[in-house]
Length: 192
Image (tube, rainbow, N blue to C red; front, side, top):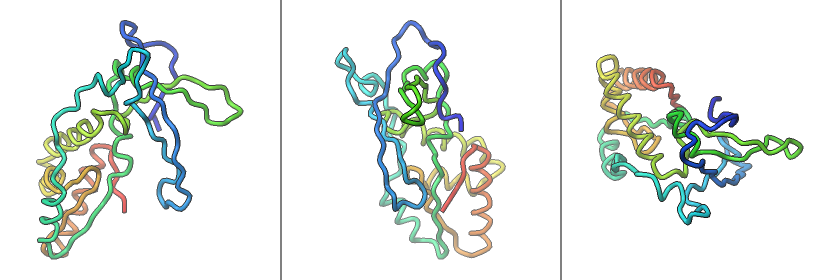
């Protein structure tokens, strides 16, 4: 899916790479994601600092959940959706990928290999800002084509959950179509 690439050479040779420790969490009863990899970019290196210690987190872009839910209750017809694997569809600049290296093997029989994570990674301090800033930019860029959905992305999203509605069925269906289309324009997919 393009989430990571094999390390063949360093992109930025002036600064040593950072290897993100990780482990898996298995939820056998989960419907959508049974195996989830958890990354720990707060793990200190031999220098005594972690990747997260060295990153700017960006401003808080997350809506206040109580405001989002109160606005949600004002609609006669409501719906919610989840942006499927939102972080995994936002690419990181090539020159920053060496700070998101991991050691991985797909089977216990395979040798361990070096990889670079190519997308925004959950567990990295800047990830929430990068994800929400990307959604905000998508809303701005596509406002003319999808005016209703643009406003929803700016005002009715909490993390990766769209929480919105309308006052009648026709408007709700039109909004649903626009949301699906605007997300597709940004390579995102709505689910649930």
